[in-house]
Amino acid sequence: MARRRMTVDDDAEILVHWRAGRGIRTIARSLGRSRNTVKDRIEKAEAAGFTREGPGWTAVEWRAALAAAAAERGEGETRFPIRTSLEPLHDEIATALEASTMTTVWQRLRDAGKTAASFATFRRYVTQQVRAVDPAQLTVLLPDPAFGEAMEIDYGRLGMWTDPLGGRRRTIWAFVATPRASGMHFARPVLQMDRATWITCHTETLAFLGGSPRFWICDNLKTGVLKADLYDPRLNRAYRELAEYHGAIIDPARALHPKDKPRVERAVPYVRDSFWSGRSFGSFEEIVHEALVWSREVAPRRRHRVHGIPVGELFETRERPALMPLPERPFALVEWKEAKVHPDCHVAIERVLYSVPWQHVGKTLQARVGAALVELFDGDVLVKTHVKDGRRRQTDEADLPPDKVAFLMRTPAWCRRRAAEIGMATATLVDALLAQGGLTRLREVQALLRLSDTYRESRLERACALALTADGRMKTVRNILVAGLARSQLELPPATSAGAHLHGAAAIVGEFGR
Image (spheres, rainbow, N blue to C red):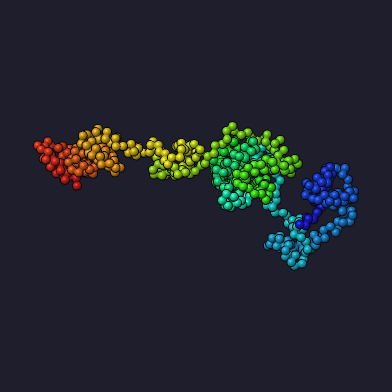
C-alpha cells in the first residue's frame, strides 16, 4: 500500500516532537511514520537553519517558520501550482456548489479537463476561498473527562462461532465498557442481548473495575432505555434500580449519535481485532474466560494517547481511586414485566398464576420478579407480594371478592353443618344430594343454601320439606319459594295418614312448582 504523501503539517508535527527532546524512534512510533522519514525532515530543518535548542514552538508556529524559510529560498511561488489553477474557476465553482455537492462539482471539472487537482486539494480550496465550513461538520474538542466521572457502554458484534458440541453457528456479541478518563476496556462476550444479560454484564463490569463511575453513558437499547428522549428517558426499571443501588446516574446517548460515546465506539473494533480475530474456542465458557484474561492482561498495555503511559497503570493510579465504592452485597438480579389482571383475579408470570386484590381486575400491573419474591405494583404502589416457589397457582383468598371466598369455603362438611342449622328437612335434603357425589351435586347444595340469603330460614325449611315429598331437587325448592306461597300455604296440616300427607304435599308442588 502506498504511503500517504507528507505535507507541511506533518513536518511541523515532527519538529514539535524533535524540539521537545524526543528521539527519532519515539517520534516515528508516536506519529506512525518511518524512522527514515522522520530523520529526513529533521535533516531538512537543520539545513534550513533550525536547531533543536530553540524555543518550544507549537505546530502553528513551526508551519509559519517553515513557510517563511521556503519563501526565502524562492519556493513559495511553485509550492501549490495545482491549487492556483483553481483560482480562475472560482466563480464557476461557487455557482455549481449551489446546486451540487462538492464531490460532484470536483468530478465534473476533472472530467471536463479544467483541473488536475485532487479532491483533498479541491476541498481545501473550497473551504478556504469559496465558502465557509459547514458547522455541522465541525467536531468540538471537549475538556478531558475527570477520573471516575463517566463510563461508556455499548454492544458490538465480534463474529460467528461454531459450537463444537452440536456444530451450530452462533453470533457472538461483546458487551464493552470503557471508563472515559483512563480508557480501560472490559469486554464480556454474550450470546443474547436480553434484559437479564444487560444487568449481569453491568454487575460483572463493576466488579472488574472495583467501583462505579458516577455516570453510565449507554446506547438507546430497549434493554436499558425504553424511549429515546434526550431530556426524559424512560428507563427499564431493573436497570434504573441497578444504577440507584450503586449511586450512579444513567445518561443515554442520543439516538444515531455515536460521538456521544466515542471511546467505546472505537473500543469495539479494537476488541474484535485484538481479542477475537484469528482465534478458535472450544466452548462459550472458554470465550468468556479468555475475554476476562484479555481485559486484565492485554488491553491495559495500550498507551494512553494523552498521558503517554499504559492504560492499566493510569487506571490503577488515578481512575480506580476516584470510583465510587461498591455496596457490600451485590445487586440482586430482578426483572420487570407487565402483567394484566384477569377476571379470575390472577396474573400469569412465567406460567405461574398469582392472585391480586380483586379491585385491580382489568388493570395492567408491573411485576418485579426476583429470585425469591414476585412483587406486583400499580405504578409505584405495591399491591401484592408472593413467595416465588414455582407452583402452578398461588391464591390468597383475601384477594377474592367476599362472595367468591364464601363460595370456595362451602365444602360438603360446611354444607351439612349449615343445613342442620336451618332445620331437619333441609339437612335431610342436603344429605340426600351429597350422597349422590360429584361436583355438580355440591354446587347444587351450595346454591340451595344460598337461598337463605333471600328467604327466611323457616320458609326454606318448609320448602325443603315439600321438595322431599316430590323429587328432592334444589330447583323444586326454588320454584316453591319463587312462586310466592303464603306462609299459610306452606304450613303443612297434620295428616291422618302418611298417604294423605304425601298426597297433599304433591298437590301443592304440582300447583306451585311449575
